[in-house]
Length: 274
Image (cartoon, rainbow, N blue to C red; front, top):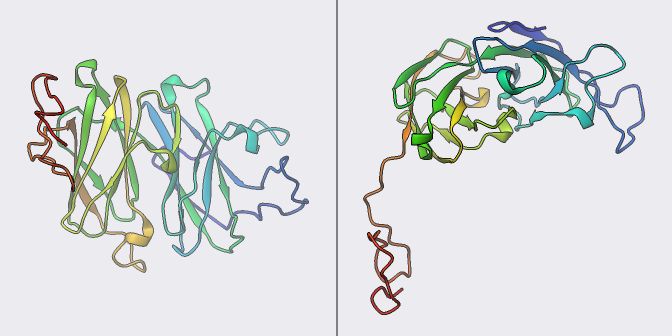
């Protein structure tokens, strides 16, 4: 098991088909297994996966907790996945307060059959107040943190996530998990944004269900300015708020005039030609 806040380095995962013949659809690949237990003070708990050589590509899958050699880690029981390209961080998370179990497993697969080490880190979400700028401080060689934010029914609709990274050394990513999202991986985020060269980033998304949502902040190893050195510390100002109105008229190519909202549906083909 990996405790919240703990990072463990391991040797290369096993050959996914080592020791048996590849038979599809009954194929359950060999994986390295790691367990995590949810924190009662945090709605979300997760495990991240980072190949120590950014040229290598390991993938992460979330499974129900295995209780012995005769169960667990089957392809049919996968709950979430994170299968991003080489050099990218992987992570899977589960929602502690809406799942039937409080302990889950992450399987690390080695489809490329490479001989390289990796590290896993267990993390839990902390509270983020709605419409309040909050610092998310990623320390040296820290790649991921998570927040949970409550979106009341009065705030449903278009919501924005603003990021301000300082110093702006390498992109920082942010992604969103809906209130009804019980399990998830970095492949399955509803919306994602990344900071630009000035450290600014923003994602706009439609929130239709009120409740506690997840916000994941991370960076990818391949985007670290010096891949041979530890990832530098970075502070990120994170804010979740109602999307402000866009006052600039939309003027698509080929349209007669810019699109301007009207207080009533009183347009006709003659008065508003297209």
